[in-house]
Length: 472
Image 1 (cartoon, rainbow, N blue to C red):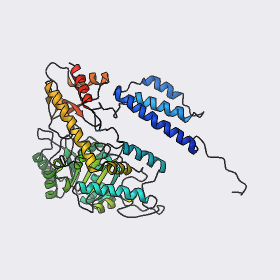
Image 2 (image 1 turned 120 degrees about the horizontal axis):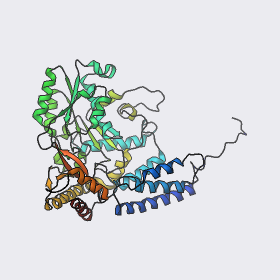
Image 3 (image 1 turned 90 degrees about the horizontal axis):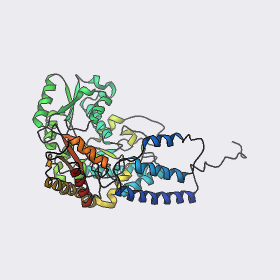
Image 4 (image 1 turned 120 degrees about the vertical axis):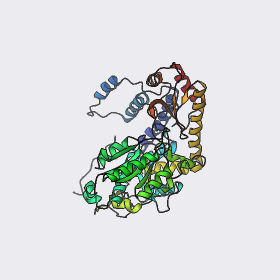
């Protein structure tokens, strides 16, 4: 290029000056806080006219630039009225939380620096921070000091990683030959109350959906150990190769915990990989009152825990932890001369299914550092206490409690004379007063209430109960 060449200025809409950025960021911070207050006092449900939204979107032809201030205000307005508000204190829904503040700060920092979490050569600080948090979580679970792992975008990714590790350890030739390396078809075992993502996982792993064995439960929502042993032995007689047992610690439907220690024993006796899906219930490890519920997790070959569930970080922030870091490296090994480092068992691109990835672990690092285990214990125990309060209020109104979970998940059925479960849920959602779900527990429909918001109050509980009672 000639010394006299002149480059055009950077695009100001994409790279504004500092004064402009500061003004817009300050306004965005205030507007987000104001929207949060309005949301907490309004409808939990979307109130947006979708047809009108499509008409508005059609006008965005991206030909003429528009002021960012106006675009941000437009976007906030659409989200304020166009989503189910999981950040509403009366969202008693799935495992999606209201995100804690430190994790929101982490998103801003990660978005600004935008590190590539593939290599310790290019991102030494982020890689070390994430590895430190993973080791701390492994110790909290009682796993060996040399346990390792990584952050994932979801619990599904972590569970997929567990299955591929199990397949690789069971048959080293799996890495080159795939499922045909095994002497017969393979199988994995989990409860019929498992997260349905397992159907996708076995498909994605190339072993087929027929490989997924859904073991019956014991009448209380927990995997039946006799049925598990029987299924494994029956498969072996037929020449099928068992590779993975995965109990759930906090089932999606009812928050139940499978018999972890018994699953560990069965897995050890038969040489099968033992993986605990603690995507929700793993947060109980922070509480001295509740961590005993997870006895047996310390024996796991690997564990899934989602920080974007009961740890209340922003989406998505899962974790995969294993006592076999070498297996993890064997599964994801690759050679890439263009990478700035190739440190086995450290560089994420050599130990995860992903390559390019956001700095996810900063969310949990800042949250844990700001609150400590004790602060998180308050958060988790408070959710359990709020759930007990809902249980007491509904029992006093004649509702029947179906499950006995201590993981902030309550399943109930109404007294005689009420509408059907689905009609009750529909009417509550239509009212916008609260959000509840329909689930199944031991084959029958129940109303599911889960406490995911760290600031849900007694008044919010009373409003939920009033909304349910109004359906009568």
